[in-house]
Length: 447
Ligand SMILES: [Cu+2]
Image 1 (cartoon, protein in one colour):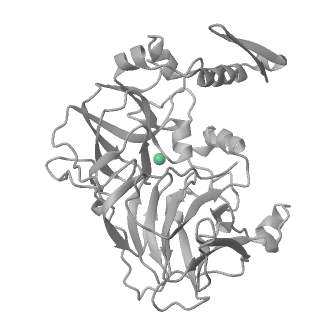
Image 2 (cartoon, rainbow, N blue to C red):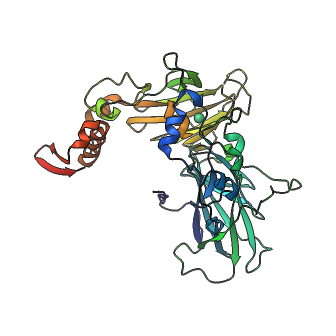
Image 3 (cartoon, rainbow, N blue to C red):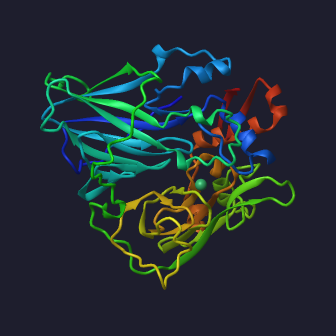
């Protein structure tokens, strides 16, 4: 099941006449479970499974000759790309999300610039204009787009999501996917400008698909164009609130990969401590019950404090790091090969972008700051699913006493937890149903 959940701000910070949502993803022909087993085996050596296709809103293509060698059916009439119809002289909000497991994209629309008005759910103070917007797994943006002055009724422009293959690490061609060369990086959709009145459509736009075969190779945008890449740090928040200029709790983590001495499996980790999910009950329940969570890598922070996290990435690939429960200010980040964060060499700013997912470039660093104003257990993890899976994650235990004394888990959530822990025990599958007791309420639950 695949979809997008939109949370509308109130009041809207920017005016627009219509809107469309563009969800980018990467697609695997193998099941997630098969990929997970391979990735967590010795042979994978920490390399992520290589995707088969890039998709826009769930559609894409795969070269039929490669499908044939693998004995898979291939129907070119089912290889599609979306067509977004915009009414001319109307302003549209394009919501862009990268829902992929690993792939990063460069997003652009031919003949149009993108006015960035939102990053990861935070409205920006001044729209920042760009031709190309890099977007990593887990990141979101909104742009205002209007059909350009030169467009006519029916004009078509390519929407390009160029899959950045350098974000997919392939070491010596070794992968569970034996045909990495079949991945087509030119993932496209179409913007069509029309004069017809679309005001009766729900989103004031019409979204359809058209056939898009694998013979149709889309060359990259012309090198003669002077293309502007989004300056992410210029996306200061609309509320005008800068990062606090002091820090109460300062942490430094290094995002590493290393081979466990006991099993020779290469895992991702912060500070050589791969995150481990508890086998019994959720961490939140443990804290509420006053139990220790020593088995999971966690950082304890006081409610109300200003927390700074220095993230160093000594690895030869980027990581998009995502924090739950908060937005943070990015205080600074290095270019590729900038080395570890060093206060004597690197400057920080309190006026940068506020968001919840930051890309830390290869062999480089980033510094983020947030206010601990949301008691709970909040995970901070790499949004490359494979890195997260093997352990590149930690938990902020924020306001422990408040969590223990004041947070109540709703009954429905407890019920789900119980079902989850039951499903982990193979013997439980033999039961057809069970009764869960919560206070005076008895519920009969069918499994
Ligand atoms: Cu990562």
